[in-house]
Image (cartoon, rainbow, N blue to C red; front, side, top):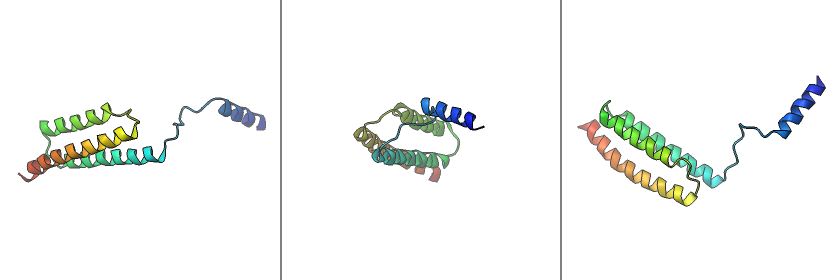
Length: 102
């Protein structure tokens, strides 16, 4: 039994795990949390809108923008995108509020 454990241990040491992701800096982690928070806020706001082609279009637009910038790693660019995204979302939120209230 011990020889099989030694074999398993030697294999796991020699082959990097495909599950491990590279470590990210604290700044990257914080920005990622902010991006995810913005995404959740957008989805929650869109869930208040009755089903319509407009709702689908707004959701697709938001998702496409997030997907398009998925691989951005430069912190300044991420901060810029977050700022731009928040201002676009505020515009979208005003439209959503008009649809829900009106």
